[in-house]
Image (cartoon, rainbow, N blue to C red):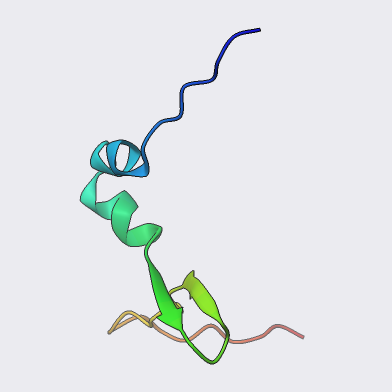
Length: 53
């Protein structure tokens, strides 16, 4: 039986581009009990989407 080699998270993180790191960033929210993805922020100058129907 072969041993599995674990890859450190720091090595994987070093291979990501700045855009990918920002996309997968998390923030700590004590009220929810852990790390969660950042909420989507509106981009200035982008029109709001209107619901259809």
